[in-house]
Image (cartoon, rainbow, N blue to C red; front, side):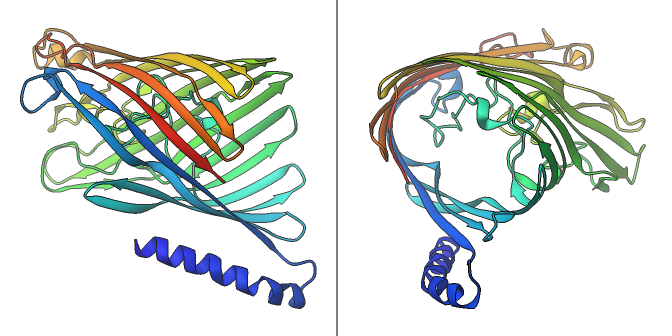
Length: 381
């Protein structure tokens, strides 16, 4: 909450100082303020495998999801330098919280741009996200993240971008997210000799757009007893968006290894590497692949949209080393929504979504399913 108070105070000071800035330098730098206030209302049902009581549980919910925000943007007089600060707002009783979403600055020269700060980038771009909005506070159900859509989240980074109207390339050096010790032992230090990095291309032509990219990070460990070791996390993503009149088709496919924590919204236990032998440092990678397909059809202020997502996790060590009944998990999700833009700054988003967690490879039994039915009230400025 202190972050929010300081943020609002800074914006107020800028507003008061704007006339003085105009006197010092003309034309003066510019800034704008925006906000998004969301409220979710709905019903959430979880099957017995996902509940503490071992029974099917359904409950209604009403809260302010964490992708609400307060935002300021800054621009130099010639628009060559700019920045953005954005704070996420969340209220899920008995707590309310503020967190940092974006904080970066950039410098643009012609078709080149350098950016530094807290943000995401072209890899896993949200330009392709499906319109599944209800349920972020209910076990992170948003945009089918981890259920067919790969998004690497916002991290501190430095980006180098070249783009024209039809082609672009972006290279980013990023802070790794996964810094845990999966070895389950004392005397282990995590280290990185190279930060996380991504390379993404962009192509546009008419109503067609794509951002194919690859992301990579090597996690290394110094081990007091046993062999020093390392494992890699990498992912390739291919998104496609095609618009023809009122219809839009969105697709993202991805594959890679060891997503756990590095790319969020995936179950850590089933997407991390498996340490076969700490004395030799023998590691077995967990392979992940998936995709999402969604369609949108706009009729005036109304949009009809729906989509499906699919994820597969596999590691041969589950059956070979632990004797599990299988070495693969398949989970999937689907949603249908009918967003309606009542006014320019106010919309309603009715939605129903379903999530199937697949079978437990250890026992072969179902890990449960859940569905959400609700509406999101959206005020965007």
